[in-house]
View 1 (cartoon, rainbow, N blue to C red):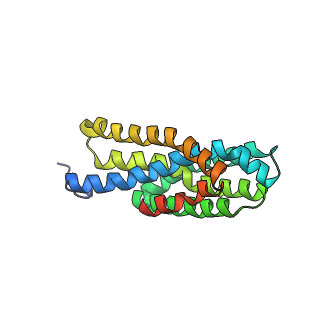
View 2: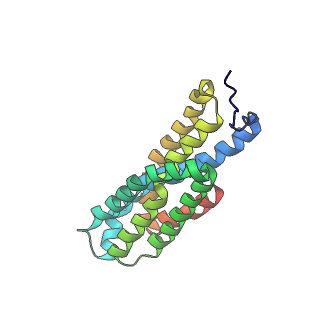
View 3: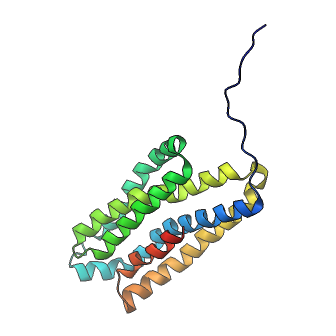
Amino acid sequence: MDATVSTAAPAAPPLSHADVRVILIGVMLAMFLGALDQTIVATALPTIGRELGNVQSLSWVVTAYLLTSVLVTPIYGKLSDVHGRRTMLLIAIGVFLVGSVACALARDIYVLIGARALQGLGGGALISLGQTIVGDIVAPAERGRYQAYFATVFMTSSIGGPVLGGLFAEYLHWSLIFWINLPLGLGA
């Protein structure tokens, strides 16, 4: 007779609805932060290019963010398996916010491009880890209900991002599209 000893940790008790709601609010804010950033910058780019005196390099402002965010997404996934989802999401938010401050303070297009690359190093985890966290805390049968909340986040950022980006760039200052990330990130 083969006696095997189970070394698996006991399953954690299911979270209460109130616990799930608190986690979900934080995750939705993090996801909103990433989704809004992808939409708010586009409408302000012409103003940014004119003010920084280099319209020819504007495509790199978007490309730098996309390249770094795509590069680090699987890395954050693996690191979150090792160090925990919450820890890696908080690190990602921190990196994203440091990149946002650097973007807002940029006075040269090349500095802005580098700052966007840094911002992408954090942004690559905001949406993917958010969905992973919800997958961890919500039973598969209930996930459909929570997907509606995520759809609302993306719909709001898709509509509000370009409007805010245009308003900030036209009537205030383009750097506000990056400063707005600070209160959202701190809330997340």
